[in-house]
Length: 262
Image (cartoon, rainbow, N blue to C red; front, top):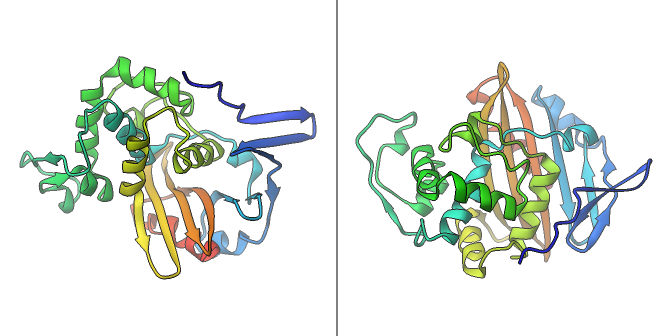
């Protein structure tokens, strides 16, 4: 049975807003140290960083950290977890055949495994997974996972891109921490497989697990990069979202985070 999920923000008094992470209730610290990186690239956004070694939670924008947005393709983490848990996805090598229909990106126009579909963020495959899960099971699982506002709709196979679901950067961070610690109400296998899929970079100095996201937000776009960095014996969680003019700016998601963390 799922234990009651700690409140996102636990207000001890009118001036004390703490965030529940792991076994800690942390007060977010506002920093201006990152402002030059955002200004350098002429973008507005928020970054939240939770360092498990120093037990610090930092952000450049407290208000935006709590503001919910569509998760865009960061939802592939959740979609994949649910698919694996319900056996809609059998394993990381499950095969998906390209139907020969033209796609938005060339690397979508080929057969994929679940692993490569996640790596290349192949929307049609994750739409297929969502349809196989079904609306009722998707709704039940999002409630069990306490993911964002848990709203599925209006379209089952696109609600994370253009529908009603919303999640804040702080909520993303909390969800990632639970996945890393395998404390979500899912099997160990499911959570371990998803972490394998999220492995983005591995060097002598660090290991990075992450997922991007990009979706319409009004007349512009919202760009996400969420994940965690393992470096020098510590884990650092991060969630970033940016206001972007077009997809040509998408690379700034990773660039800003790496400028700050590496």
